[in-house]
Length: 139
Image (cartoon, rainbow, N blue to C red; front, top):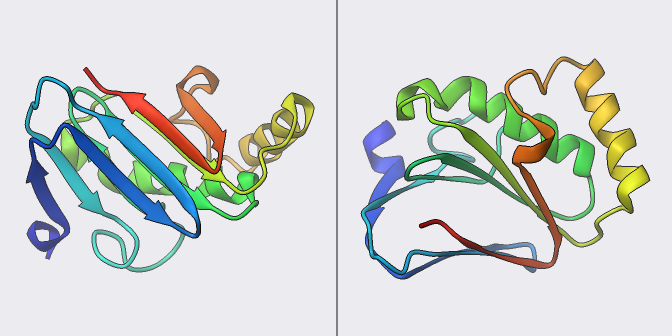
């Protein structure tokens, strides 16, 4: 089942869109990258993020309305399920949401999710959080 959830690409632009949110990964050297459909494919129950991209890191992508705390928990559950299967690479969370709270609001969401035990595998510096769309160069 996992093979049908994974595709390989060398595209210079890898785009994920859902719920009016967009995450674009720039791959100018056209390296082979693995794209994973997580929600409903690689993970079919429990908390899970939408997608994952695997190159020199494992990028866990959640395209969300506004529930940042829940998005953090979804990503961390996905890390627990998938990171070892994809080379135990450094996990990075990418959250694109309708509304991104001010720093204080994000810190509260981070603190609540941390108490829940969901964030043990993720460092604060490894989170990319943007409103509506994000571009990330992966080389």
